[in-house]
Length: 293
Image (cartoon, rainbow, N blue to C red; front, side, top):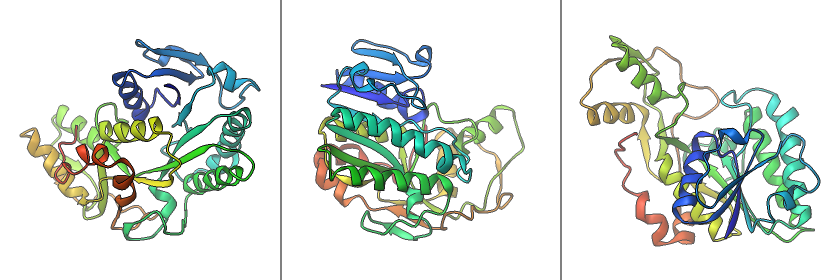
């Protein structure tokens, strides 16, 4: 199967590309800078600027049977108006051009922040209440893609990502910062109180699920990509330290809790399990106490 991929040089994208290669798919990567893409057997890279997509972008990508769309600029600044004012129009133009040209199947990654301040177990049927520019832009893009279904025939999966961790994670993320503190011999590690409940999956598992959905060309609509299990941030940190037999004083409460998300939320994954069956469950439920990369 011929699969196009955007965002292949990002944290999740590198793992998605590796999973596609592992499954021996024919992959074409769209990137502004193709030198950042690690090519392998069955992988080609096409120079393409999503901010100014050519009219023949579907042809340049080799008329793929499915697109996994991960690319999104401006992160991790969730509050920046850039997401709604600049990034959303670019995304709309790029994906709209591909759909107009006949793209048959599209998987786009959304965000759990689309749920806004809903607490507890979040199911896909909950009405979105996005509160940051990033979440508002993602939600609006989803709505517009769903609107295109009235005039275009294509399969759409909107994969709402929760929290992922693992190799290649941004240096400013929690666990890479903890690793850096240990490496420099710091006496303590500043963090929040750690009592917030979140939903975590290893990035390799996130990639496996995204690829499985894309290869099935699912017309799933909104779908949570999550473990379905709440985990305290403090427990995540402590389990990570225990796996490495490492110790450092945790300076709890140094940072305030984010005010753009509730204290306790996690995903429900019944629809994901029903859709992928045993393929979804193969790796999903082993992460109650994760070995965080």
